[in-house]
Image 1 (cartoon, rainbow, N blue to C red):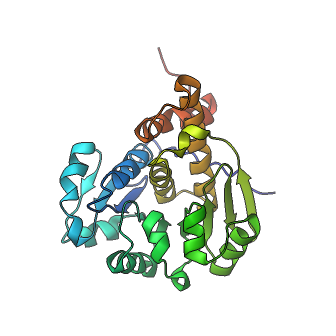
Image 2 (spheres, rainbow, N blue to C red):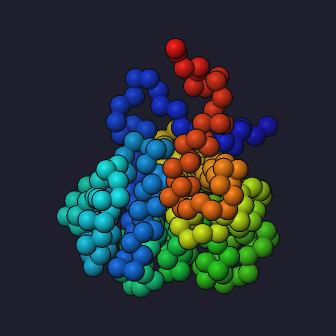
Length: 271
């Protein structure tokens, strides 16, 4: 009998800062400064620490990131090694350019064998031979085809997960989630979630969940992120129809997750 797939972060009462997930986000470019910001907003409520770094040519992005939220630690190229070592998980690709610098960063992340989430531009310069069991790929249809050279179907998603020994979360009207030997479809969401940036929010949430040392598997992390993200979109649709933004989605994630815990996990508030 399989264990439940939904992973809900629940820090132990005696834990301290850094024990409940540390995420490093590598992303951004001169054109797409907002994507890593949205990834940070998606992650920050679900793990202890979020670091942010970019490629050498995009260090000016730090000021925009610092203005977006105080809940991120921007690290320079010199401090990046320390943050990389401290991180439990690395999310890479949001807002990056498809070029040799990005490819080099992706190779470095994969060679480290750390838990990682590969998203956006990183999927378009992906060294497939370096994928491993702790990798989660989050492509939409076009990115899947660019990465693997196949049209995205249930069959090809499962085949690629099995061939490369990784976890793939194909984003769509129904998300398709696969690991070697298993595939499920995750319904939910709505047309309001077609806006730019919602995928960055999902990637940030996923990176945060996968950064938890207690998260059972990449499959559980991806399933949980998809379910929580879709529920947040549904809650916003109930309130505003399709007229909500990616920032709204990031802010709604904690409320959406709260609905899955139940009183048994968090307890009733004391009055």
